[in-house]
Image (cartoon, helix red, strand yellow):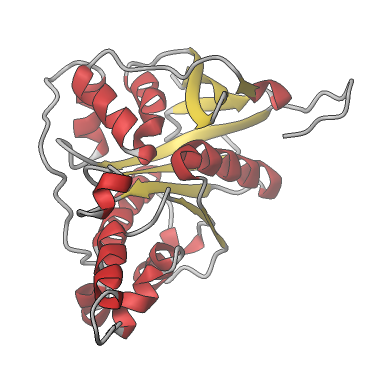
Length: 278
């Protein structure tokens, strides 16, 4: 973000109306909320990806981990917000896309015949999850798909907040990563699948959980990102790029009011002000 000297950017304000969450040890936001708030012990267990029942049978058979993950968290968040998913603009953000599919394509290319199936190929593009979301929900609304490596959660959040304010409409943010098999895991050690979805609205509603405020150019800071006291959750935050948003979710879970700092780029973090809605 570049700002001319003496120019103050106005704050961006949105309301968080719905949350979807799926990851190691929790299948939905309520379960994750209790763990983040310290009300129940954390559970270090493998993420279970549900069958994408919202898809037609043919697409359901072709759906990989990324599609199952994004459909699950996206539908959770939209249902919590009480909105029609077909009418919501969306922002999809992932540090690398479908690791398993990438592995299978690399394996095929390393074989003598180099057979790449059409399904593998169309699932390899970074906007595959967005396409399947449109099929499952019937959405014709605009969709942005981005990647900022380990800073993808903060980049997606910035994009979604800006879009919600600029267009004066609720926006669905989905941030997600899946694990990589070996030998890719040695180079990119993402150990498990994790996804989070947020419905962000420019106006407070009866379902609003909290208000998020970005203070113009001051939202980018050199201060260190917030960490989690629980070792299981902190390990997850550090290991999976999409989980860099866990400090925001923890603040939401404990109804914290104040500043939250999230990992973004090397030496540059994203700071926001959070206040719970009564």
